[in-house]
View 1 (cartoon, rainbow, N blue to C red):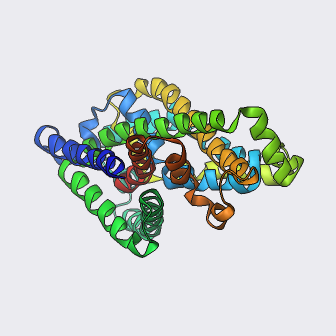
View 2: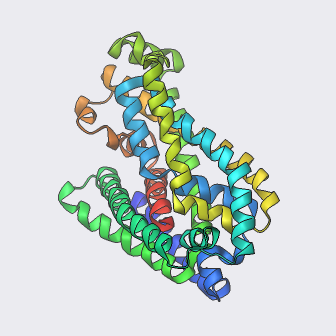
View 3: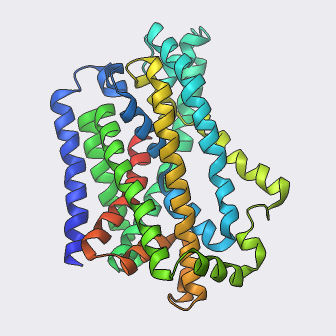
Length: 344
């Protein structure tokens, strides 16, 4: 446990260090604080956009859905991967060019300039909408942070509030200190943690389980053929889950990433990098859920995970990895949560 705590603590120290570093070097003006001076490179924009858009919904929610519903969980990620590719290539370029032309550094600025709203109705409306919905969205991220922390360190849920306060304080610190640059760079670092957690952990777990054939047989034994049939949802169900992707164009913390890139033309490369990262993280989350279900059915893991499937990621990490790597896995879970929290 001490090694796990050390690894996780190092992760938190790095996040704070990035905020301090960016505050000293990159945050001089309002434009720097909100958009990084429109000088962000393609890799940073790509990873920051996809990671800030994923959060606990992917690492806890999608894995939990795959645990209960099987391979059809993949449809819950296809929609946003496709829509965000489109956003990078088409919408992002136009948004970047226009916001620079009118010197808009926030989305309310953009709406007001684009529709020549001199009464500030659009500005006020958009601000109210953002504040109301983001408060609930952020509260969901912090709740997920509490679950991840308690499950990973084996402590009572009575202490989940302490972990929520810890995550909130750290994110607030580096966001206020370093602004958009700090948030984007920490997002890029957290993307590495997330891809490590969502690719390495499922591979190790599948190998320990005995391979893909054992995995397939176990999850099919649990729920029959629908568990391993991606078309089991039917046309209506698939369309419904694809609709999840329609949320991405309306997320201000994703759109502002496109506004920050150095040149609009760089968004094509960002699209390639971001889409690859999205696909890898999505399949990793699905496999985490499938492996956890197989373990329960084979008697390797107790069925208590079924009471709260959102806890299976930290549970698998604790089971299969060295304590120091478990700390990094906990960091991966927190990375998903903190990246969206800081962006919002």
